[in-house]
Amino acid sequence: MFLLVVVLFLTVASVPVTDDMAVRDVLDRRSRAVLTRDETAFLADLDPHASPAFVDAQRALFRNLSAVPLAQWSYRVDDAAVPDGLTADADSLATPRVGLEYRLRDVDTVPSVRDMAYVFTRRGGRWYLASDTALERFGRHTWRGPWDFGPCAVLDGPAGFVLAHPGGEEFAARVSAELPGAVDAVRAVWGPWNGRVAVYVPAGREELNALVGPGFAAGLAGIAVSDPGVASGQRVVLASPLPTASLRVLLRHEITHVVARGATADGAPMWLLEGFADYVGYRGLGTGWASTLAAEVRAGRLGDLPSDADFRTDPEPAYQRSWSLVAYLAAVLGEPRLVGFYRLLARSSDVEGALRTFGLDRAGVVRGWHDFLRSTFP
Image (tube, rainbow, N blue to C red; front, side, top):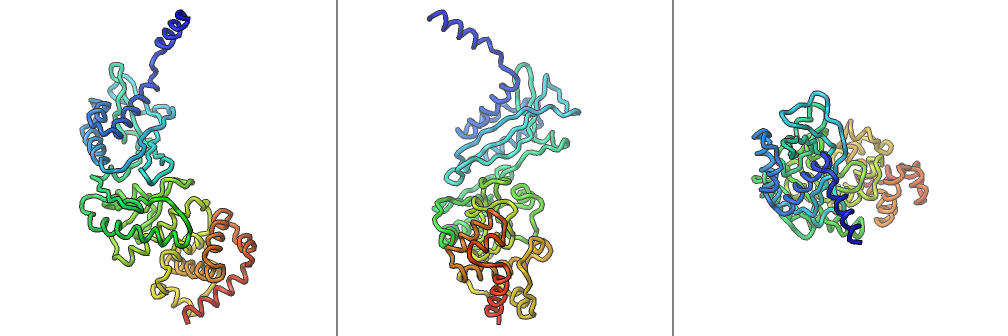
């Protein structure tokens, strides 16, 4: 038995450390350093020949994370060949596909995964992190979070937290004060929901584009984002400060998207998604805000169910018409059945089938909706 143990020990000890294992060790140390707040360890694995700008950015990233309530910060690694044309004054290069897995405490139940275009170098038998921008010319980009754009100030509360930067404290405080009421307003329609919301207040357009994508419409004040194709990583991102009344509506609208994301499949009708969120957002506030819709109704322009294309070509009428359609369905079905209708249609995208399930048909709904519009805007 003793000889067997010795043989096994010698066999294990003789296994060489591969380059892949060494790179993973760098990332594991990086993860531990973030979670244990060890700046020295975080910086120790940076290439001593890396550009000063990269080192400074990494030091700032570490410090900017100090106030962020992280429950997880780790990396997944998949092999990838070094692109032709990428060179460095080092013994060897590695450019694996790296995914940052991070989870916000008391907000995320599963981690978000973001691509990190890292370049690693080997010098004298040791591997280092050398760059997170050198692969951009090969079409690989590093995701940037709020912590890449400056120090993060976090206002925590019972309904979630607001993350902002220096200079955004006043607006962040107003958002934090409105957050509990907004979550309660969404629960009043949707039903029980035990989650918490993360709200980001970016400092400028560059950060906004990093968080929501460059296609974000310039006129929109906020948006709910999530990981592509799945119900994780939900965040509300506010593009600019708003008056309190407008902020209240916007938070209810975007939090509705966050809460309903798990019940919503890609490709669901936009009139349902946006109309339902606006229904919750404006619930109890009357119709005075819907002036564009009122003018259309009085001009006799009633039309069919809004199409997805309407939101691209003429968004304001499309949003208001969608709100009124969902408000009509709420009047016909009642709010609990409206939520059931949403859950069914948001999964199937079969409008006629969902209507039949609830004892309705498209032609009858359109007629009833038109009557509702005429009575609402006489």
